[in-house]
Each structure stands twice: as C-alpha cells, then as structure tokens.
Image 1: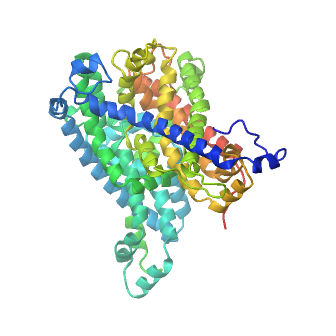
Image 2: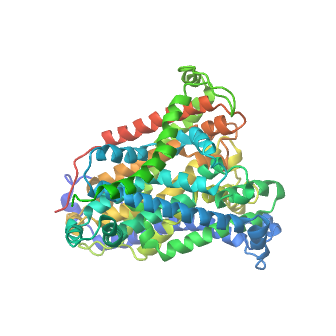
Image 3: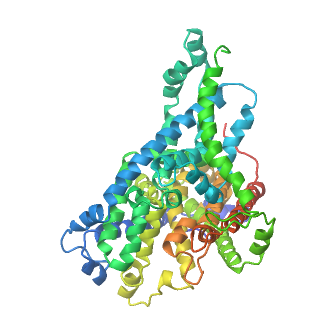
Length: 299
Length: 302
C-alpha cells in the first residue's frame, strides 16, 4: 500500500503523473515490498522454527525463556515422543491407511471418470451429477448417520472402514477433476488402438492411464494431503482402540496429556515428527504440490 | 467403438457407485430423516417429532451465539485473506518493476512462495496445537515477546475478550499463503503487455491492482470467496482443538455445537442432525449467493 495517497483515477492529473520521477519512487517501493514480504515470511516461519528449536530444549529451558536456544541438543525429547507417546506407531498407522485410501480413491476415481468422459449410455448425466453433487455437502452433515452406517457394517474401529470412508468422500472431487482431464485427451489415439484390435480394458490401462499421468499425479497429491491431515473422521470412526489411532489423534492426545504432565518438550518433538516429513516432501515436490492443490480451485 | 463396451462400463462404474451410495448418499439422506426425530442414544427409540427440533433450535441461545460467531468469521476471514493474498501476490509479481517500462517479479519470489505455502501442507490439527502453544499465557512465544518488550500481555485464548480474535487470526494465517500462490498463478496468465501498457500510462501500483489486476482475476477471486466462506462456516477442528468453544462460549461455532450435541456430554442425535441440516442450507445459500452476486463477464485472452 505504498501509493495509497495518490489519486486513483486517471482523469484529473495525467500530466503530473507522467512527469513523476519514476525511478526514485520505485526504489523506495521495492524496499517496502521486500519489507512486507519479509514480515509475512517471518510470521509463517517463526512458529514452526520455534517448535523445532523447542523440541531440543529441556522443559526447564522452555519455561524459563521461550525465545532462548537450547543449551544442548536434547534428543531424548524425540525418543519420548516417538516411543513413549507412540507417535512412531501412529505415524506408521497413518501411512498404512493413507496408502490404502489414496490407492483406492485413485483406482475408483479414475475408472469412473474414464467412463463418464469416454462412454455414452443412458443415465450417464444422472450418475455423474450424483457424484459431483457431493462436492457441495460438508462431511459434517453426514457425521451422525455415517457413524451408524459404519458401525452396522461392522467397520467401526477398523482401518478398512476408515479407508473406505476416505475413498468414498474423496470421489466427488476426484471424479470431477479426472472426468474433465480425460475429456482433454485426444480421441484419435484411442480410436486407432481400438481399430488395431485393442480391447477396452487394455486400452484404458495401457494407453489412457499413462496419458492421464499429469492429472492423476495432481489429484493423488491433493488426496494424499487431505487424507493425511484428516482428523474429524478418525475421531468419530476410530474412537476406541488406541493402538490403531491415526497420527492426528495421537498428537491431540499428546497435547491433552501435556496439559497435565507439563512435558512441553515432548509435545514439540511430537509435532516436529509430524511436520518434518510433510515439509520435506513438499519442498522436494513443491511445484507438483502447489499445482495439485491449486488445481482444485482453478477447475 | 460400440462393440464390447458394456463389460467395461459395468466393472468400472458399479464399485465406485456402490461405495459412494453406501457411505455418502445414504448418510446424507438419513441425516434429513433423523433430524425429524427425537433420537437420543445408541439404543433408544427414535420417534418422529416433525419439526420440533427445528423449533427448539430457533429458541436455543447457544446455537444463536455460535451462529453469530460464524457470521463474524464469514464477514472477516474471506475479506482479510483475499486482501492479504492479493497484496502479497501483487508484491511478488510486480514488486520488482524496473524503470518505466518493465514488470518483473521480486527477487527471491520463488522462496517467498515456497515459505508462504507451508501452512497449507500442515494438518489443521498441527496448526491448532502449535498456535495453542504460541498463545500460551506463560511460556508462549507471544506473551514472552511482549514481556520482553516490557508490555503487558493478555491471556489470549484464556480471555473471552481476545480468544475469538486469536482463533480468527490463525484462520487467516493458515489460508493466506495458499491464495498468494493461487492468485500468483492467475496473475502469471495475464499477458505482460497489459501491465506494461498500464505502467506506461503512469498508473500507480494501487490503481493497477484495483483497476487492472482485480477485474482480470475476478473469476479466481470469486472462487476463493466461496471456498473461504465455506471454510468460515466450518472452522470446527481449529476451534475444537484450540479452545473447544470457550472460554464462556466466546469462540463457539456451529460445528462445535453439533459435535457436542451428538458425541459430547449428551447424545442427542436427532437434535444434532437438525443443526447439521440447518448448516447445510446455510452453506448452500452462502455459496449460491456469492456466486450470484459476484457474477461478471468472463474474460479470455486471445
């Protein structure tokens, strides 16, 4: 907002503006824009940095001065979080469930989207809109009945139940996105393959899927992050058995118990364990991640 | 092309449809049905009570209080996030204006974008728990910074007067980076010549943003608005983990009300479903309204 004070319409003072000493003003603006950008950058990084640094401090050091650096690297905090608070186990649990749910989502989403994009049949529009309509409903509304649906199916407190539910709730976006993507692929290749005697199934797995790879990767990243970060569904559908919990539940429990035990360092270590791999993956694949997540909004 | 397409259609479509109908469509339909019953618990009977739950809702002060908070969030979170997002995206795209006839990105722009996007890849749970520590009244980052400067510090989440604004700030904090990247992507699709022409005409940066960038990005801004509005009407996890609606219901939102009613101290499933149904219609009308009000002509670059 460096130029707020200037007239914003072109009509009254065009001459004055053209004669303005442009360069000097821009130098100031440049410094200012860097200043603003830097402030927001710090605001973003500081809490995370504080979390990492505190995870190496003793509880005494954390209480004495939150801004201080650790006197020594207390890696035992990490050990207490990983084994004592079972963050390690929850981490692996989450990996298993998310691997299953993302694979299932992609398989079902891609096959359904392919049919919607490439085959004509009666009722196609109806089924398509049934899926896409789900985009407008918040999960929340279904929470109570979903709990009973899952329980009656004997899937309460099971990973399979969670995997199926994650996949089902990810289908609207996945189908919506991939249908649009399959439609953009050229039809000539598919027709040529069919003429050459390639079957419909072979065509899909051998020709169409490889061609749709960029789209598949974007949606897979999107789904991975939303499943990995899910909290509400496990909270409701995986309440009882602690050994089966997801990472988010484990962290929440750690935070609650920290309130009584006063073991702040362990909480920070637990949070760091959860943050580090996600940030590492993000930094390594940031272009794909940003594209995958923003694609959801740009259509 | 016709020959033999049915085996594929059936095998490809039936499993997803079954899964979807079983776990998504049927719960939604049941939610509407349950909302008209007095169902109380896991085994108790559910008697149809018509619209009694909705009548009770109308006179439920806690629900109104939560709704009031959601409306404040709805009014502030999208505006603040979009303004900050546009501001930083503009800075990144045009901060490095060179001379009078050149538009360049600011130096280190890629690094800024990477960092700004961090909160987006973190789980809401982590964001909530981390900020709860930042706001901690004794050993938190904020309090001790203020004390270090010799200033008095509020108790943040512990004070009904400040708790709500603390939660709101975290909502904005966690979203801005995403919209910087989103708007940045949309801005890079705008032909550079447009900006250079505007610049030659001597327009200031603010004018450029208001008169050129914003109209060109209108579609994206509108979509952002809808998503943020839906986000503001939800806000459930953040609030539940940071304050659980307290202190003294000052940060309560509809989602927390509903969760508490269904899975908290009491198990009023009928009543909770009624809250869910109201939420659904609210979300839907907000989404439709913002799309309607914001409708403008689409701009395409040839």
